[in-house]
Length: 195
Image (cartoon, rainbow, N blue to C red; front, side, top):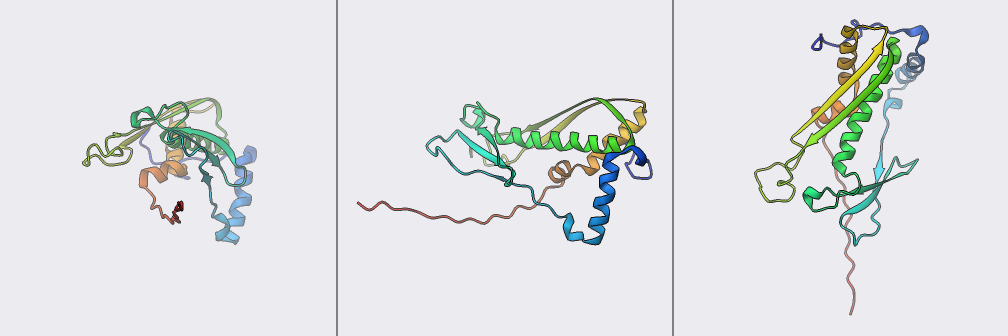
């Protein structure tokens, strides 16, 4: 049943064959010994280049790996949408986190995945960000996930429990659903040209 509550009692791990379970045992011991070691920081950084171009930039994903990723501005707010926009990246984060969570849980349960397809979409009324209508909030008004999971040697009931487990355990899903406070520290300077 799709609405059945996910819990560890409902689903039993295939401990003897799960690489995820083996790694989680090591992590559990580590985090029980030192709870502060369970805290991680994910990161991304934009260093403005070609500042004359208001429609394109690049973000470095992960401050250690610094994987470059080109970003564009959606044509709905005046850009060319020739590269993924920040909303696309938000959807990519949600879809990739949700699919990764399904893979981890499936491995622990011994579910053999044949196919997965996670499509995340986000809807926004851009009149708010453009300040054309002050009554429109500046935020995505809704997000949606379409999840296709095909597996063998399992039941539909277990696959529905897998989806519920992914909803409960997916960090990006839970963050977006509940909302997280954002702090901001700014350092602004002006440079005046002397004539």
